Image 1 (cartoon, rainbow, N blue to C red):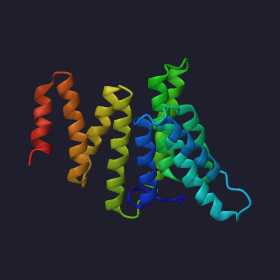
Image 2 (cartoon, helix red, strand yellow):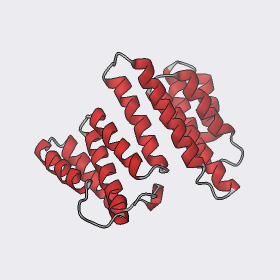
Image 3 (cartoon, one colour):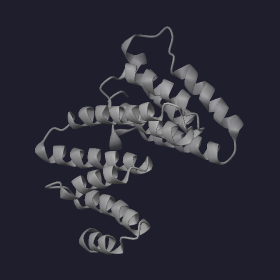
Image 4 (cartoon, rainbow, N blue to C red):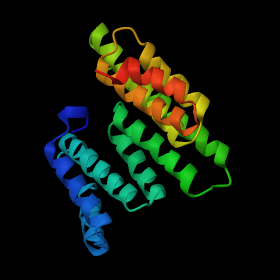
Length: 214
């Protein structure tokens, strides 16, 4: 459905994505193509009522985009995610998927317009941020969503290799008043791994003692 998020995503989506992943990494390219063609047909409903097909088409289009991303075709995946955005303009998941796909384009293809690709990734991540935070129904939930958003900003910056940026956003998670221990552990773990990588063992041990040791 067009407004699902997190734990509300139907288990069928998870199962189908699991099948696609197994097909992709198991080398069954023919099976992947069959699933892709089926999803493409399902994402373009014809001759049915107006409202219900939009919700169905959103789910099918997202699955098709995920499948295209799994088969290392980010350009086609982007096209499908943009179709999904038209079907569900307020869904933050779509904006997050678009941002991460632009990041993959930036890293994998070495495009001529690298700076523009990078700007697009963070622009869509900001779009995700605005839509996700609007979903908060209480101060406690807003705190949780801020942690989620800051972590995802940090994770994308880490994927793109921008240390000063991902360190800033992971620190925001650690310093967020009222943040739960799980969010802080995840941010601290990524920072610890980074500090170990650059040889800053003292900072890594400090974070480990504060956030990762029970």
